[in-house]
Length: 335
Image (cartoon, rainbow, N blue to C red; front, side):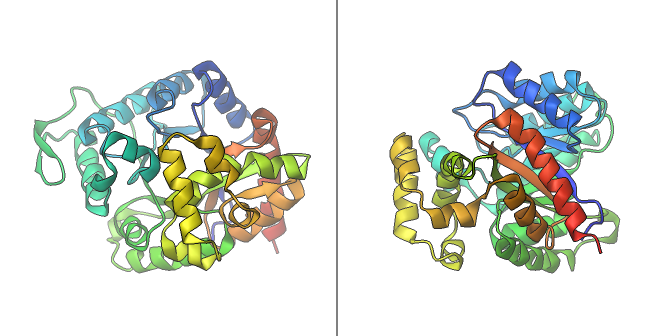
């Protein structure tokens, strides 16, 4: 693994845009390397947040985390991400994946999810960023599509996902994988799948980075931190593949019930079904010491971690606590 693991943060625009932007500025000040703004139709526009962040930060890399190619045409996604690159003087990253099934089902898009659509979307985006005009006939169509402006710098592509085929595809074709997992056993499994894809990776594609896109909840009060983890854990459990649920001994039917309640907008009921075993499997939740120990174990298999929702009972305080816990985790791994 890397001697200096990447530290990223997920910013969820549930709060007003100025509040989310202020949290991103705080993350840069705390030493985070990247900020990914989550993309769900029922939250505020992630690209509005990214545009504001581009003007109020200097160093941190910025991108959607993760966009999907179903709610918006892939060339439009490429243009929006290129705009972030322009506004941030070349600091954009592109997180793209198959999307959250619970929210996509509300839009009638759940059946569109798949590996091929994600791969085609970012391959076309890369060509558009390089100044090409692109025609494409596959999971989506484009005819002589291109951008009318130059894109500064390189835009790394991070595939968001957790299935075996998505992990292998990322290892072969992308710059990194945002693996939706918080448990060392899951990251160990993901590392093996990525390695299978890297075997077929062209030498000119450059280095690859496996990041644990982890639900983190850190606070001084252990129980409050674990309680705050319920909402994101509900979404993760609802979207987890059966082998992942089996790996952690989680009842498939219970996870399915959670997904149905989320789709129906019955969020309190869904969150109430989350078990302690789900919190242990699908989040890094507890005190700063507990979080540091868990992140250290994750970093035995990953090249870095993205500190994801909910961050903690006090999200602003948690930005700093998580950075300190990650620094402690890094030092604990040093010989």
